[in-house]
Amino acid sequence: MFDVMLDEANLWYQEPPLRKRKLEPPVYSPPPSPVEEEEEVYSSEEDMDPVEREKYRLQTVESCGFDVDFYNHIFNGIVPSGCTHYDTLFAKAGLHCHNLEKGKKYQLKRVVKVNAEIASLYNSYSTSEVIDPVDNSLHTFQTMVTDAGKAKKASLILLTKICRIKPQVPGLGDATVFWDFNAIDDFYKTDMPDWPFNDGLDNPHLFEVKESELLDNEWIYLYAEAALFSEWRSEMSDYTPFEMKKVMVQTKEDVVESSVKIKSSNAIFYMIFKVRGGGPVCRGIVRKTSDGRTGHMRLEARCWIDNSN
Image (cartoon, rainbow, N blue to C red; front, side, top):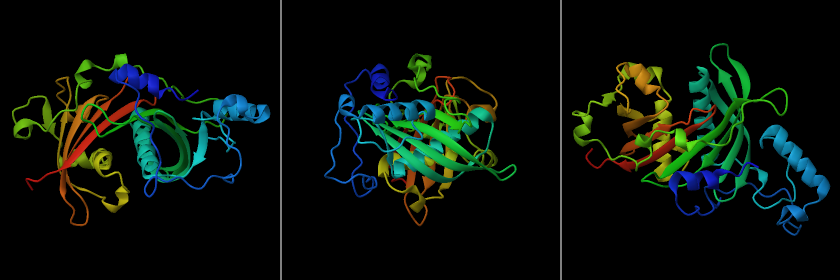
């Protein structure tokens, strides 16, 4: 039901299907299976016990994949999984998307659990505990994010599809997993850009983010994290917080107000940042786009070490 990413990727890239992502040790290994190795694992839906198949279907439909028990499973189904470095980053991205849409500033406290769906692409269904800094109240947040692989000079492409506070009534809540890629402007569909010539000084579509604006929009550090993760694929807490040296934003539109440009649904961020602990200075580019549907945000990222510093 939810494995729709392959069709979407083909529409977007017009390329052959991406190879299956494998969670392999040491970085991406999931926890041991709840069943013993010698037990039979079903390879098709027809082989699955009818009672279990119906329970699985109901749980998937009612929870949108977030609250699904372990079953001797159909191939490519949703299963409980451990929280990898991917899932942590994806949970942050989903929460960021929700905050932008709803005008919130929820902060991630911890990822409570993750369900995984591994087919042609990887789906992460994470449930997290988040804090509202306004009154320090706790909320249960759910997000479904797809790892769409690499393409068009991007080393990481993630798509958020569900970003919501967990509904009190099962079966309700925002849940639109299908993307409308035709709604994205062609300006943002080309290859990822290179670093602007002369640091963008002669580009009227670029503006540099002021330090005060960076303090008001700390989520920009998440974009730097996504950029570095696209290259290093490791636990980001070992390298954060970054020392942000420069941030520039580009949009197709000639927006006068910088605050509007920063929060545009479609924008390209150019960042120079230094990794914590005497690490290297890096340059990262993140392109953010959306099709306008609730819970939908796409981040494409690339990064490299800045040898000029």
